[in-house]
Length: 276
Image (cartoon, rainbow, N blue to C red; front, side, top):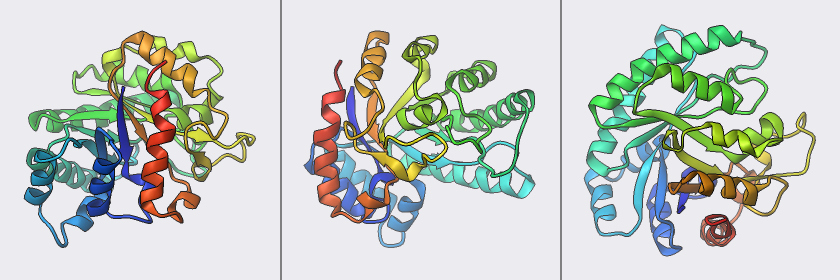
């Protein structure tokens, strides 16, 4: 697998300008660009400047994060999603990186039936897939393990992607999100997913806490927690997955560190999980 870095990992203690230099310095193969950090870059730089950096670097852009709350949104919210997708497609055309992570809706206190969730998710993904496909973009649908999310499991996410039936729509496999759903009780569930439908693997570990207490702020560097990451790697490699293994953390403790230390330690802690 290829070593990737998701900008969420240092989103409070770094900038895109710093991230690309540090990712290059510490040997990452790919970077996932956050749309909000890209917009901040554009206040002082241009897409052409970013493209020039990648053209001269071994580091390459994988894609963009993220189009969130795409299901059960109102008309105004959908217009915002359309604008965000257009921005991601424009960046992709100029800079590179052909994939956009899309996230189902998370809303506290709301419960949706499985039937309604599948129907709306399929509708929204098909609409966006058509637009993205015209620009050569793929969409990576990410189940979120939080109890308030309408799509929590790998099984339900794959049912939705199967029903969408578009070549440019696939899945994000996020170690923490799927642990949050069922603690990875059965790693063999990965084998139900066609390997060509796994567009990215997000690696992250978790504090040893009851699921009722576990939040995204409890994401840890690989090897520092309880998620069976070596087992997940073995399953992915056995399936033939050779895409990116991208470090994605939302831990405020890491945001208090020097960004360079996070990049350096993150590369050291992630590399052992690139091979079985």
